[in-house]
Length: 138
Image (cartoon, rainbow, N blue to C red):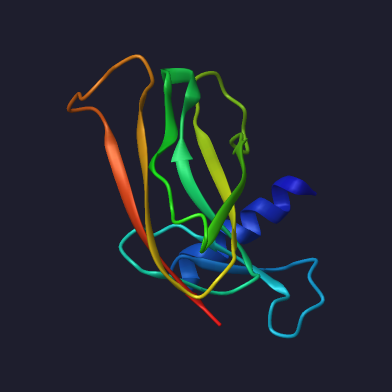
């Protein structure tokens, strides 16, 4: 069931341009969706009080992982969790996704950077950073 759901989400992401809406748990009008973003080149626009996530390719078997190297303004956005989603077929050495979840708090714009690297290697050509602009609307 979970694998089927992930497959459907993946197809929707491919066809929908990188954003997926899911039912959330909030009862406030207009805030009943959690958005999942994959494209760092597009500003993330969310409403105050809304949950949102970043879904990033990751392969911890290589020693690589995502780390927050520039945190968003804590007045505007709060980090809630990050989890690793294994691949559908769990083959040795295969990657999956890291999902970083946040809650938008107050209106305004903030920036955040996540860097994909090995924690024990500093400043190599092998690191990759995604910089996100987050716009929280009232």
